[in-house]
Image 1: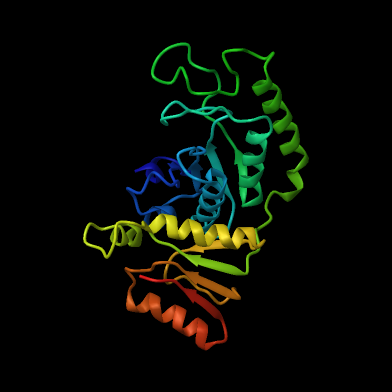
Image 2: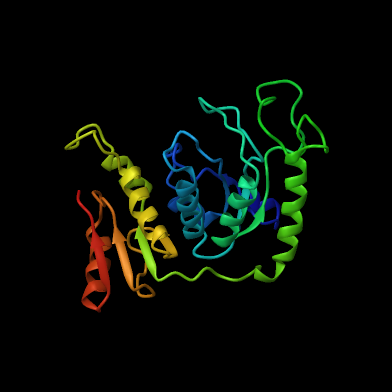
Length: 250
């Protein structure tokens, strides 16, 4: 319907994050002209910044390795977690530049002006309740200047020699009620593998099962419980051609 009436590029705000698993974005992303994501630091997690890094790599994967947009993040606290922590000085900048380093070509925020009433009055904003004489506002302005100085990297592509296989339908299946144990869950295993590679200094492409693996030296396959024969054959062929694969349990 949109394309019948307009040539304007189509996007929407995906929610590639630890607490949202309702949709298979591998199926949706090809319909987008521009892939965009909302990401809010989740302080319910043991290592929120590690999850942020994974979500950025996964969003870049949805964009086919190309540019994507961070459509929403917060300057400080959100209003929907059990404990809504304000960001420490420099934390918002660090998070923003992590997204940039992983392919984001726009850093956007929700919201512009902190609401005076309503359900999101405790959600942070570019312009906070305290106004422009505030640490939040000063860091926002500083971030704008930093992003201006990074214009030269626009259009460059992230180069990775490690791929990690991930799919939402496998997430659903691996976390089904009838499984060997509920003591572990799928996403924590994926995050653990990604965080280990990150600590070792590797840049990781998160790709869907069945994707072309020929560009990589190493492929990591965490908990790929639900896998089609054709997708498994891609991994087997990669190894037969001299590649290295690490396949975890389940």
